[in-house]
Length: 219
Image (cartoon, rainbow, N blue to C red):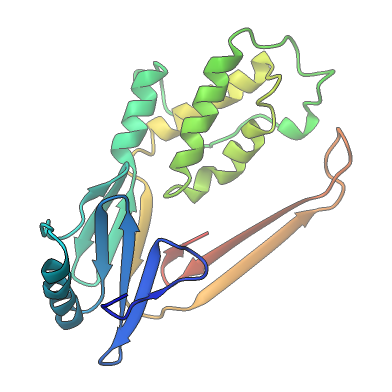
């Protein structure tokens, strides 16, 4: 690139460079550009981009692809509250009473031969799980529940639909939840766990992992 950015090997839409000992990151999505860095490099890069391309500066990011971005001095908060509300409205759970846990049922014990009758509207279940998969970007607290529900996409039973509705009721009471990143001690920490041969269906093992960078999870 003329602007001397280097393309990331991990993500082809991400470019970076170091200028005056400060990293500058550029992300491309269709015809949108996102810049993040300290003020001086960002302002200089904006001028250079405006010289090369016809563009409009929209200022700080606030909302993008269902992700809400709230920026304050020394703090960034990411959430998908509006997206959650749309999910609740779409599946008719807005007026339901919230619950405090994302999954109350023990799905480990629900093999195909004991899970009860098959669900009639399989498409609706698949659509619900699909919308929940996008939500885990800012809600790691529902990752396990969504992963469990997604294992029954082909032939879901009625009990799985009950579990999905329970997750929606949990979201009903946690609409404002999200990820808060603050300045300070930025360390990368990882945690793992494993359930050896825990599946009652095929006796396979299940492993979990999560990573945090500073004050919140990133994976």
